[in-house]
Image (cartoon, rainbow, N blue to C red):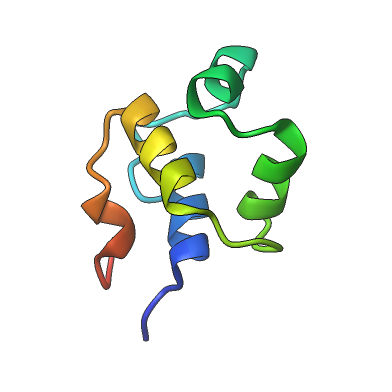
Amino acid sequence: MKTTVKCKFALIIDGSSNPAINFKPSKEFYEATGIKRKRFGQIYRGEKSPMMAEMEGVCKYLNIPLSNIFRDSI
């Protein structure tokens, strides 16, 4: 079964896919990624799908490859 992009996005952000990442969004995160707090919550909860620029910004901020979001398994 394939995991959707928005679910993988949440798994990567919350550290489920990599326990070494203990992520808590900060003001710096929101500024660096250009994602507003409310939108981030909507993406994280799966209410909205992330745009490519948002995924790229988060991956760059967390220093992880964007391809991790598009693989069939994490």
